[in-house]
Length: 307
Image (cartoon, rainbow, N blue to C red; front, side, top):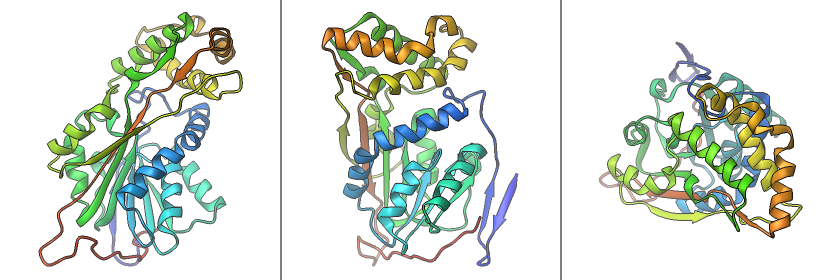
């Protein structure tokens, strides 16, 4: 266990772990590249949900499960230099890369911490709690969301996005696409990932004691020879391969991952197929305001932590 204390006395207790044995996608360099591509691929959908949720300049935002920092960096743009962002992830490697990306972008109002969510305990409150593709990996997402929402001030915002993997499809279906979908779904599910977390967000918010959320769903619809979806699917399978082999879903020879993207492309083009990756469901709500406080609350832009 480590802790970091800034000049204002803030004590953030953190426990670091790679979590390599339990995280289906692993922490390889290839996975970090995939995450960066995914971050750009999903950026517009996430920005839309965060705007609807009320993320605005001057806010202090906590981004849990931040990975290599894509959502944190997006939010840093939205809150501007008058706001602050703290991204938290269990992977020290991912956090190190996120810090490098923030430094390269000149964003000194976004910080990152390596911590298990169960151990994360900052001595402050935030104006908003957000996360993308994190609740599906948790054994009890409602309990974690209930605890983390306690870090948000009265009247603050809670916003999360999750996928609905079973809705992934190709029309018409193709045998290779169908096999890839089966491998992906089985590996994720057997590794403890909730493959339909997006459709469970409404119930999860209520089980966490939060007000009824507003929700949207969005997703890409792909096709043709130039679509990036084939590489996206193949790269996801590449990251899943070690877990798939470990739990007996498939072998590296069955995956033949080096040619997977091109084979998926060829099948889709020959069939004039429409490829629909899993949609991204967003849910957001506002905590009840404290007695005597307006719904909008008061944003505080003081930088409350240090690396």
